[in-house]
Image (cartoon, rainbow, N blue to C red; front, side, top):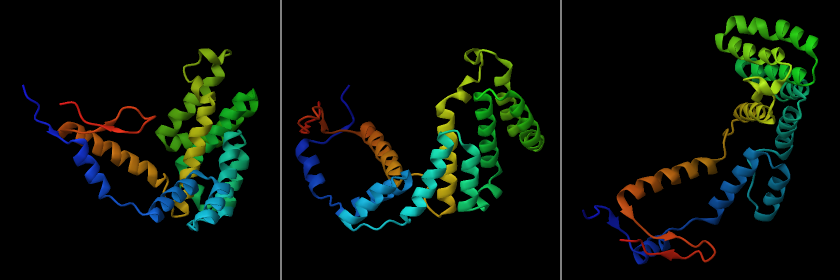
Length: 226
């Protein structure tokens, strides 16, 4: 049965590409947005100087946000909470889920450091009351406290809570909240563009065969197989 897909030759493809014009200024803004959102403060300053592309966020603000991020990733959650409140106390006041996750991370760090009595006291005084008000918080608390049941944490079904990836997850959540409070996107625009590109490519794959780059060392388009 013959394919119903439209065939786009290399010549037609290249002709269409040649009509596409992307301004350098737009590309620079995209790069700057990525650097700001991801928190590369030094790169932001350097890129600003080299290209003249202005950042929509002061470098000092980026550094403050990354200081919070670093504190969480190093397990210094109490310090991170203080830094967030210094930036904007409304962030945690208006986001109970984020505050709970930070407190949960504090509990995890106490357990990691084998401060069992302190962990139990903290769970009872700080997290249990929140669990009484929110079922999902209670479930998360129960999961976390279950780490104390196992002498060998490697046998614990929730041992991933002690992984560095859990710190990173919490840090990313805090980072997104700070960005939102500063009227900035939580994710770089580049991520959204890539998602749109993948969607468009999938749509094109269903409807047509078109030139592709098979050898990236040469970066040459090859005619589609018919």
